[in-house]
Length: 286
Image (cartoon, rainbow, N blue to C red; front, top):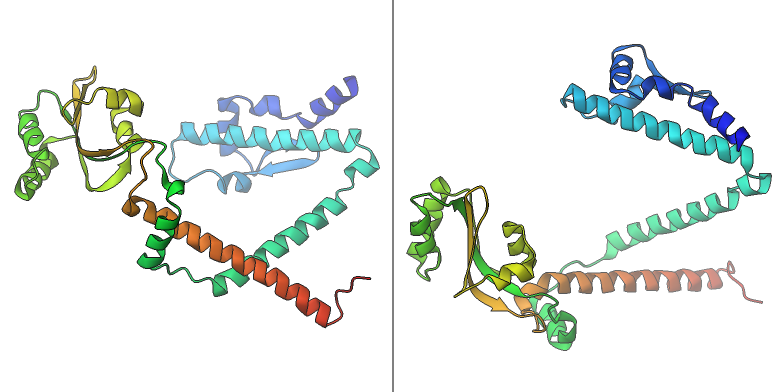
């Protein structure tokens, strides 16, 4: 243990000097080398690559401190490992070669697939898959169609918007949107699409079960301690356990179909490569 502490002390010789924000600020304004750990040096140009331009001096100093400490910590681990591990334990040749092979295989698969993958999925294919696999689309949470309003509770426009946003008339909905544009903090509508109930619950900053528990006559109302009124009108809801509608499931079905096509291409590639290798005498089983 004493030997390890000595190694750490030697490597981190500059860390006490850069552990404070004031010291790091001085380094950033100073010369090219901003930190040293053992025989390694960290240059200002290294920080320039990771610290965004235009941020405040305080943020810049904080990020510099985090980066310098992470850089030095990596060197601590490396130095300790070099000292404590046996020669065989430090030999990573096989692991590096395995990783290289895996990476090259993956990159070629990506090239092969990208050149051949058909990403067009017709509506008929989507509907066919949906009808055959409805058990995969049973809802874990409710879906809703909703209109949401966030507005100051004492706003004179609140009641007008509220009245119109629950209407089925296009003219009323257009007027609600127009009034909300100038008077509301936020107005959002999902009248023509199903959304996960959790999406709506995030607007109320509460768990969806609590939110739904507050729903009365299709309305959810909540006024926070700052006097901001949040309300949602929910014209339609699908409960947990029901089968999600096709229109909601379609994007994930397209992803499933494309993913299956991709796997089929890779499987075909693997088999073709093996067959070609056998025919060319490059793969022989004795």
